[in-house]
Length: 104
Image 1: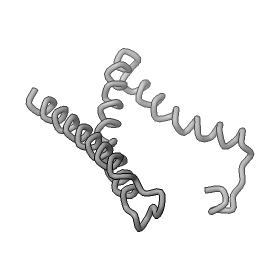
Image 2: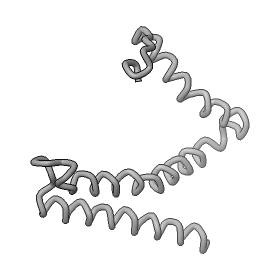
Image 3: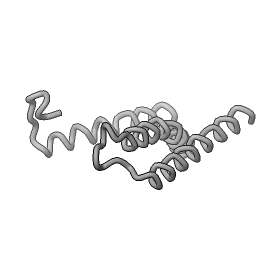
């Protein structure tokens, strides 16, 4: 973003700002819900991350399997098969997780 926006920050300041921006929501959540609920919040964050994973994996497999986009670096057939298998397992486990959550 630095070159795109033509806005430069010293690296130590950029690190400080990004770390603070990452910590502030966690601190607010701990203040609101209390320290005793942090383990439930960690589990919830991991569930949300697992549900977001297919939205990263499926486009990644699609783009890296496209010869027009990747040219000579396109995935070979065995890797495409393996990647789609892994993507299918991830989606299947997420569907199972959602069904378990809804039904219980």
